[in-house]
Image (cartoon, rainbow, N blue to C red; front, side, top):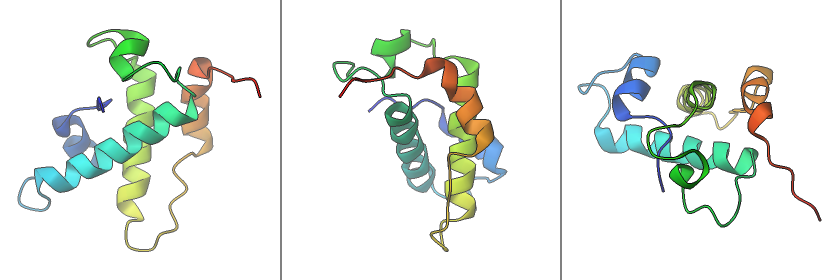
Length: 103
């Protein structure tokens, strides 16, 4: 899976450094959030990854920001299990990229 944000972006957004969390832990949140965002916008099923949707290094800034917000919510609520990663702000950022599907 192609991650929508980099480790450096996620670390900066979460305000954590390598001493507090390993790369593997941060990558877990990035991968989970990236997958959730792509499912939320219902990216075409034949798209193997985000590169197929937007092209190499062309993930829109608002999609990247939405991914960071999802990461933040998942990270902040990791122990309680009460995360609600798709806040109104995230939905507003992703709405222009929503590809509706037909039943």
